[in-house]
Length: 418
Image 1 (cartoon, rainbow, N blue to C red):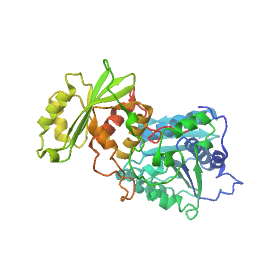
Image 2 (image 1 turned 60 degrees about the vertical axis):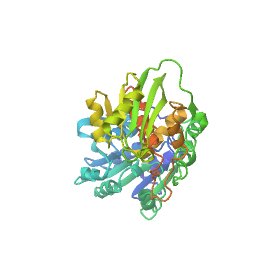
Image 3 (image 1 turned 135 degrees about the vertical axis):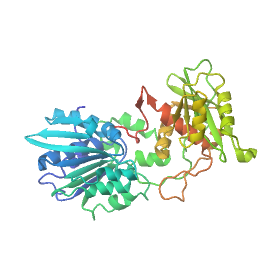
Image 4 (image 1 turned 180 degrees about the vertical axis):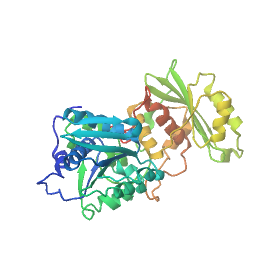
């Protein structure tokens, strides 16, 4: 990757710690804002240059929600740039560490994933001279605070970047709003701050989101989710089932006994997945619960003799999963990060890579009713009218967002943001 130029905000990130900078005595930097706004690459480059200029023989932390995501979001673009600039970089993937050499100095950068509350234990005990937290708002507070606490070497600094979340989010309240009190430099990025993006690309990204997601990921605002989850979805997104043969078939399942069960039959043609049929059963409405075996029969009827490549199932439905395995289906537990899955689903629908067909009347009904819980602290959906929505989300993230084994989800979910 070749960097031709930097914007004014990127230049501030690159030099804030340098002699002569008015911000050099500050202890942290926070960069938030729009997706694809150029904050990630300049943060990573500045962090390594600062570490190699100020320290010798020290350890540093590079943190992402997962180590794999950190490599994709940051290191895959950063390491080639460092090598072009004359840095010698050696990565030991099995040990999650990167060794950097320059000008006779050697420092070690440890890679950490902060995906859940248990992740704080991974970083305990290590002494660091600085830490960079990529997508800090996606990490649990316990992990972020533990990472900050490990930076006890004299001259250590903290580096944060993230896309906005709910304004009640702890990182917004504790760091963004209190940046001056915490002696942190705060910079807000927009897509226009990334010189690598043309006006045409910026306009295209602007058309990929709507409502609160537009305000967050395009305008870079910390706003609360409200109203319908898929507020852009209308009759224009509903199509007749395609004629002729489809290339591959899958089924997605949201399992329910007391709550409704929803299954979707998906067929692919030319990279587009069509939800051509569905099965939806509400035991409360019908006043009878069905067994796992009965649901397995319904799934077979939905398949209709087609060769089903994969059945994606609600990961909490352990007994139903086992019944399907015993009957010979190739079963995959669905990925179940609700917010990330909603974002991926929305992007695939907007791109036309997911199409809801007219026979799926319960899915179409739920699209009009599926809403954010405006009484919750943080982003949560209301747990009603969400059963077809869940099976569609399972399919979107687990199957449709993968091409050739590689993840191609929404811009805000583990994607490069250079």
